[in-house]
Amino acid sequence: MPKAASITKDMILEAAFELSRSEGFHTLSARSIAKRAKCSTQPIFWLYENMDVLKQEVKQKIVDYLGDQIKNYHKTGDPFLDMGLGYVKVAYTESLLFKAIYIDNILNISMEDIIPEPQLVEVVKKGNYKSEVSDDEANDIATLSWIFVHGLASLVATKLMEYDEEKIMAILTTPIKF
Image (cartoon, rainbow, N blue to C red):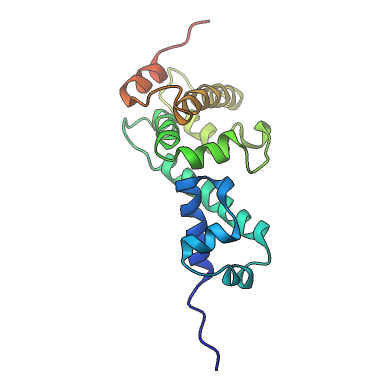
């Protein structure tokens, strides 16, 4: 009777995810994942049709993880500001994952695919504005805000700007005059 498999699909996925966190998505190979999972490459190919399938699952795990980190960041009580602060914090704390998704674009998506994210538009509409904002205004606010916050986050992720949450909060709360 053959020995029961001790390496699971979840173990391989977790090893690949952790490798992406510590060394970058671009380092994923059957050998590097097997080394991290402390197994041979054989279980990887038993459990996954090919590396592309495994990498797709890793990409989804990264997107879900980063999304959870951003959505669950609560500092000010203002959900819109907290999402922006959370986005920049993720760029700082998970810079390799952030760069893979939002700078290197491993998902191969266009800006139109993610802006504005419907959840962000809803947060804008529930915001503390002097008057109710229309769907179009909320869409414009969400889009421009995301572009601005993404710029800050990219500067932080690439270490062109030091992460200082108080300074970032001051930047995000300063009204822009055109």
